[in-house]
Length: 437
Image 1: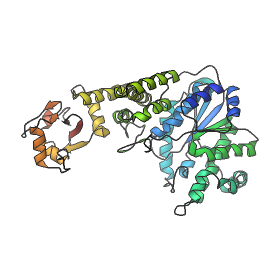
Image 2: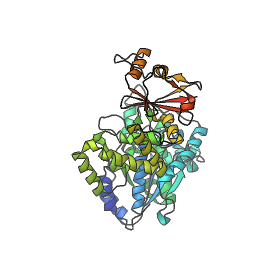
Image 3: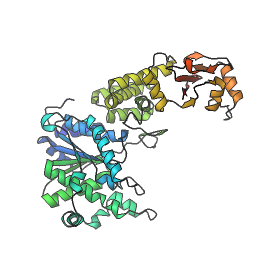
Image 4: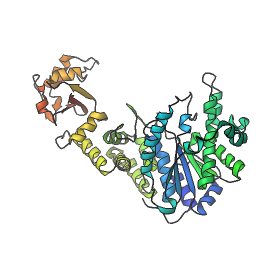
């Protein structure tokens, strides 16, 4: 990972704005000057709400890396304490509280996962991972109220957008637990400012109120000056939520979302979103992105932009071998030339890459498998054995790359790839995996 020699505030802010990564700045002129005067320390927090980060978390992770590439020092805060509370921002109801054991487990996994995206060996601006439980767990309630809580005006807190929205909802409201989240996050900023000279906090646009409260707390407790920068919350052009596939969240953990499915998520990006996602999720130069955008506008059917997006982000998250496997599986499925796939390739497909149906070791007639798996659906939406026979006799079914036209054909384990798998192709585009138990 290359760090630039200069620490140009203007260059960094310009880059972030060109890449559509800036929603709000606390004081743009002051922040640009602050960044230009020398290396600074910036932090972003990640609450452990699950045992893996998801693709939405890449936005702040990669933004921290952009700061580091300009010579600044990134701090990645894992919220072992705030994760016990739950941030009310962006939510219309109370978050389900996790147990301390769960949160501790999540913290360890997320710390390891997130640390892959920053340089921890780059000398003076080496990245740092911290856990806010380290300075919060030992603070007793009286000390918290007297030394920290006294600096917060409830009048001011209830005017913050995230709090205000919840208070206006008579059905859900907001508990004191979630109301206190702002104080905890502000205290994090104050501690990092005191102990690590951290002067910039970055977060999603829904974090603006929490971040500016931290700036105010630093001024009140330490007489210091700090800055805020937020990035836009990523949405799709059609208004649907980013980061979800048809089966749920797209995770960074390959055990939760296989590299092949991860790759396919990016390949299936809408044309209207692909250039914006290249800006946010890759480290291509602005000039390269402009060239890709021009090519995409002229030849959208080529899907070269989608390919460059999927290649870049899969390489970044999962590495060379996983990218090669995702590309290999994609090409094999597209061309129905599957004999070059490895066992691990099929295991990815069975994990979440294709609809999968299990049969016994004794085998099953192909027509029966088509019926039992729901593949033999009629134009009217009914699943019938008659339609299964019609598909086979109509030359519409391939098994492991070979057309099968006999209704007596049986899926036997001895013929299965790696003794386990039969890849069914229905028509030109539908694929299904039959797996022996």
